[in-house]
Length: 114
Length: 115
Image 1 (cartoon, rainbow over the protein chains, first blue to last red):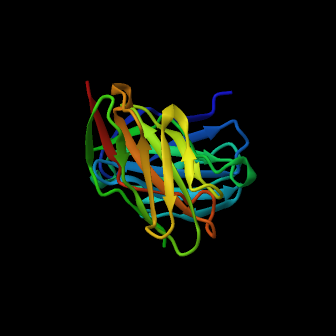
Image 2: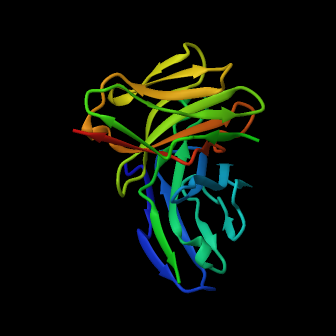
């Protein structure tokens, strides 16, 4: 049982390049989220999903796209990277409901945009 | 809209002394409240939560938090601090009426315990 996995661990991009941050979970959790962590800003919610085929915007969705074709995977796409997107990105899952609302976090992806 | 405020960027405490990390929240309905801890170069780990019931919630590593509805606060406490408690602590909130995925975090408080 791997829990929540994120790839890559670290990535350097040039401005304007595109990439996809991968997030996978094997806990069969319906709820998944993407956060970015910046110094002094805490964690800010980018996008979230309440199940396969359903996504919604969080606090800071601009510049990011998501899709949820399966319960297990929730990739985050940067279509045209900007230096302001330099951050640490965390994926989280949540069983929700009667199972307790606890978020389970992945190890993070550190992204540097030059 | 839901929001969380952690008014202190850093809290410094001597080992063995009690510690408090402050958190206030704003939601339109009733809140679910959480505390998470982050150690260097790691993801966040769950400490404790308030969903309903007793206002005093006990969690991992001897931490506890008290839900105060009138003051819209959920301060994290520990009676006797350990050096190993040094880490970054995040308070988080979800409005009961919103999705279980839509959990909003505060800006974090760095707790430093000196020997």
